[in-house]
Image (tube, rainbow, N blue to C red; front, side):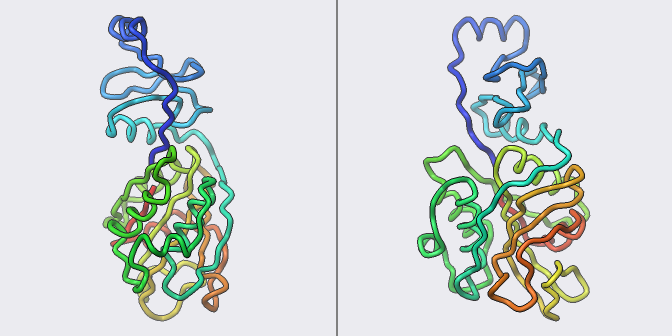
Amino acid sequence: MKKLNLLMIVSTATLLLAVVTNVSYAAKNYKGQTVTVDGVQVSYDPTAINGGIDLTSETEKKVAITTRGILEQKEIFVPFETQINDYYLGTAATSMLANSINISTNQHKISSLFDTTTTNINPEIDLLNALNKVVAGSNFKFYWQWHNNVNDINTIRTHIVSAIEHGNPVMVSTAEGPGDTYLRGHNTGYRLYNVVIISGFYNYGNRVKYIDSGYGRFSGFVKSQVTTIKNLSYATGTRGYAW
């Protein structure tokens, strides 16, 4: 996830100042805080998107995004949708996420953007590409993160906290099953692939809230609930998330 916010055009004077002081004053409203990006101190506004930092390198933007993490908790309002058929799990999740960031769409529009005829969604190709098509032309762009190490809880927690702090939910693809981990309401007795939206975090990301479009479609599914980041990490194993 990155939310681009081009806040200023760097003037010749600013460039000279950066050379002299090794500090680039890129924040819209300088608050006296700094982060270090590739050895350069950058002024940082904790109230602004991406800290008010305007950086051109994708690597630098990712570094800026993941250096925030200052809130204990935050929730984003996500308009709920029940998936309109059994295999629109990714379609419904994409629609909910887009509408939560004020990009008006629906499941019918999104269904034409990727293969919805199977529940065996390839997240990297289908979910990410469809999501970025939907938000094209906006200030949003999403990244895909594979989550093959279920014990790497810190990475998924950091990405979720960072994304939500900067204004967008996270779309998570899960692979749940017997002997592994089921999120509450998903204990079907067989392997279950699902796509949920993380809309909030608590206790600095140790607990997260997710929204499930399967509610109202499948018996036992819960509309929204809070789970531990550890449970989410295990449920996401071998799959991944768009942030």
